[in-house]
Length: 333
Ligand SMILES: [Zn+2]
Ligand SMILES: [Zn+2]
Image (cartoon, rainbow, N blue to C red; front, side):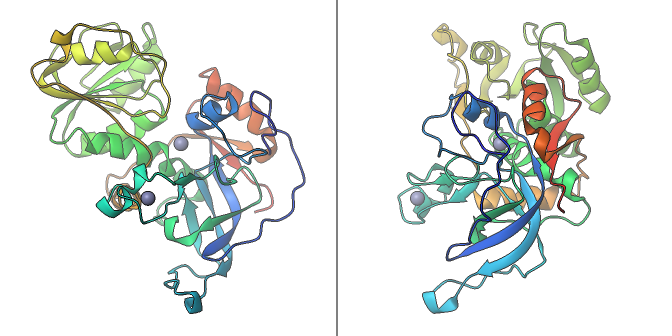
């Protein structure tokens, strides 16, 4: 499924099978989860995507070819033909800039991202740099594990930025929140879930997952929070979340795009409150998260669509009509 122009529906196209470049794996795609970022790219909210583009950065498949040669100084890959492989958002970094050299490859100046600057997984085949691919825990089938590759990993990076916070607010209780709340509960945190005002069903779902409190984003929680993560792409939630914090608390914006943040009085930030954002992921985040997920054990909720119905999946995501993470299943596998 190909995005030919920003702002248009994806088109079903027969494209040549991609060729693996040096250091890359050719992967036969089995499943690819849909992310809010895919919608931001279609809508033109992220600048300069590769066009035409195959979206999708939560890819699960099997290695079909390995193009790695030790003659070129490439370290051998630990993947074998036939192995199951996960391909995430971070697709390539230069390994050489100040960010990469200080363990912040997520901020690399020249980073390339799957399903944005590199063709992704809304397709039968994908190629990926072996160094950025993951082995996946056996406990999960292909469809269940796909949403862990972005909603899970990015959520995890956001969660780790809340440090030792005990009372944790989560604004926007969608896919990433559903996953990360399970990790937080496993680590004995208290979850305060904020949904759209009036979203009784969402609040009930959060309570049944184990949240000690659930309410609308316009409500004040019964306790001051040590930290809050904002997953909803809604700027006005930033001052709201800051006001819900105890002194020294942190607000983490977990999304790649957000509407403008309205101005707010300095007193809402004062007393050493911290406002930060999360960008992308490092390979280390991914490895840590895939290690903890089966221990929780983390459960994903999915709704599957055939690859050809990617547009339907995206529209349902946009309208908030999904019962879980949308995952595209590729029929040839
Ligand atoms: Zn994503
Ligand atoms: Zn770099």
